[in-house]
Length: 469
Ligand SMILES: Cc1cc2nc3c(=O)[nH]c(=O)nc-3n(C[C@H](O)[C@H](O)[C@H](O)COP(=O)(O)OP(=O)(O)OC[C@H]3O[C@@H](n4cnc5c(N)ncnc54)[C@H](O)[C@@H]3O)c2cc1C
Image 1 (cartoon, rainbow, N blue to C red):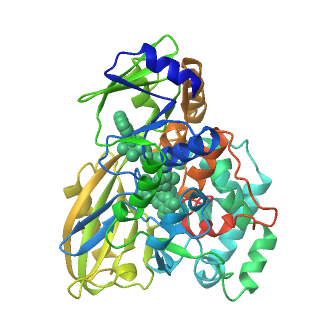
Image 2: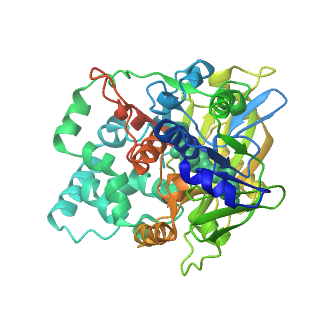
């Protein structure tokens, strides 16, 4: 605090000086601001190119329909609520159910159904699954990538037959044999945990899935602005300055001070720069050379309204079939009610060499669901949008390269963390919160009796580890 006062004396009057500048007003940036306030009562500026806070928590509304870019589901025990308890009353409670479209054109349990994928498949298929698992375990090769990892645990036959291999390719934007093993080991523990003999036996004998202890939540119908506005108000009242809708031209470093220069308006300066924006972007802004830019996925969201027979009961459906680039759809009318008697839902499509536009993604989705007997009736596209830098792409060596680049930023004086800043597939706001706290060395002053976090209940949201996004 004292340092910044001195700096303020030295800096030109058109440059406002802060104790810290945070790039990005997503969950990571907001938690960072909250932590810095709590730790040092620091004077913080948060800069984002979006007009609103919340980062990739983005909704899209038209004609009374209200969609999200993805399947965005939250929990009432999220550590984010320790920073912003005022959010809780704005969420709505939901009771989502998850299903998956299999290569056999059936909608069944997500991520795997012992009954449909194994027991009801007939003796021949059961024998092939068993032989394939035995083969994978006995002739174990050195595990080199995500496909080797999954094959070792469930065998090549079930990996293919269940559609998991195709879903992995959709999810990560490349075939599993090109996905880094380190990521597989970190993110795909789910497969290992569920394919032990003990776990399989438990599943076969268990009638109902364990009851969730935490409540599942979605944003208010009005959108994310209504959810995050109270958090912004609280931070602003404590002195945090928000520079939203700000396009940054460059970041300069003069001696030990960073100067953030926006395309329009006043520049700001600080000795401390925290970045939660993509690593490639912060390199460009700082004029740092980057030998290997890190690759990310662009996600297209298609927004449909529908009247007719959708062909399944679940509110969230994953595409495990062998075809089409769409990976998941979420029926928002199950959460918010029908609009003009119509259901409405968002479809997430990972772009690839052939699906490069909203039009192509829509055409392929329509053809695919028709072929699978889904959405028989009046299906209308209400809108769509493309989200760049939605997920990191973990080709061989990418995590190690990201680590090197983060270390280089650190040497330059920039603390880089968050979903983009750490090039880390942070699946939930919960994980982003914990990671931001860890990066800043923050621990909540907890009462001894505080209950342990119930992390496992995010697992229902995602296939691999606790993937949600
Ligand atoms: C499709 C999808 C579905 C998801 N589903 C869920 C879910 O169900 N539940 C859940 O809890 N989490 C979900 N997540 C994950 C969750 O959103 C993330 O963990 C968390 O929001 C990441 O926050 P962040 O602040 O690190 O990144 P972001 O939210 O991406 O924020 C980064 C910010 O940086 C800003 N920025 C980028 N470039 C610049 C620039 N040049 N100048 C200024 N600002 C810039 C962006 O505008 C953005 O606001 C999902 C994510 C996605 C993409």
